[in-house]
Image (tube, rainbow, N blue to C red; front, side, top):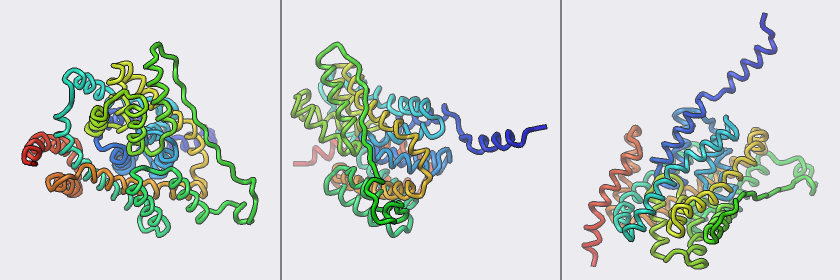
Length: 402
């Protein structure tokens, strides 16, 4: 005869068991890292669409917790969100394998492009590709931002002002401000689930905030590699706001401070990051390759992504343990609203760079319209088509200009 207690535990475990295997998630992240264009904003939108809406592997609450944590911690947003989603059901092993699978494809691509860049002395053809891809990606991001806002904010009268304020600040500053996310989270927390000390009017010792940074960097043999490792570890540890914020920071270091790259080379490095799939911050791998070859790329990429991994997995257990409390839910709602507002603002920032004439404007609106109307068309097909259009049209546009 079965023990009722044992039966109940088994039933609970079965109910909480994920509806997917770790290798299924790893394969998905490997594919997203290979085909996912658009930078952190679009990648976060793809993860929500595929893992929450379509496959239902991840709950909406877990996704929002991951997005909030990724916004609050320094480092690349998309990679941190992927790492957290790997942690949700498979803890540290899942976080580690998912993080590697997500970053590895784009790293291999930028190393190959770095070798081609050094061998042939430039990437002029990439400007033509980005002419089409950048416009199409802007349309993809705009549609993702709309869907996220519609799903997560809905008709909430408290979250909409936060969304609009975050979008406006992102457009003005062209970066994502961590203080805005923290402030939004605390505002919604205090409004919806005020802590006991606030209800009792005064209790100064009730709230403590701990911020800690950890990263490990092994000793390397060459002075240049050591400089690369230390600099990119610093960038990965202390720069908030993912792709939009780290680009000017990298410019100040690799061009102005160290003089590793010329301004033209740096612009090309950013272009490589934008036209390759995966996280925009993988541009560090390309920069590392130009500065010190293959091992420079390895050191730069590891130094950038190891801190973001630690910043995700170390606080993740606490997010999981306390994530269902009303005050934490309210805080996450506020951060999420600010994050989605920042995504919407990023659409405008990216559009200012990507939409330069009537053709790119048509590509942007056409991409959004096609994906809205024909939901089964894969984004990579649209992006490849836009790249081919860019290769054909951009030289003609440049030739016609005075």
